[in-house]
Figure: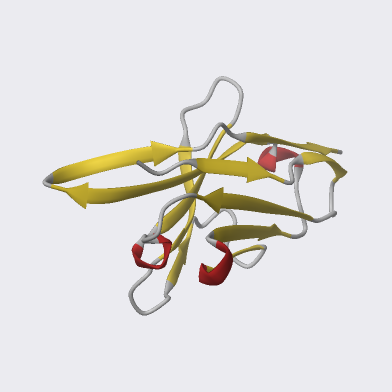
Length: 119
């Protein structure tokens, strides 16, 4: 069982920055791929960024590439999302996500943190 707790959301003006954090339970954090997703009102949840445990590579949605940076601190079991040059269209609930394989895949989601960008 993995528990994910996000923090760091809030209200910011367009062009501003926020850093989201996601603290994870579990001893195998360093071997988890970690993801950020977001869901805007009336829209489906969408992928934002991924941090792979093997090799440390990252992937981003085209809409955030060059503005957002995902990083992780394995010693703290925490993944971060640094968001710069925020736009009103970045307004959404941001969710931390991971999964682990134990005979089958188990999916884990945090409770989400609200990010609101005013114009």
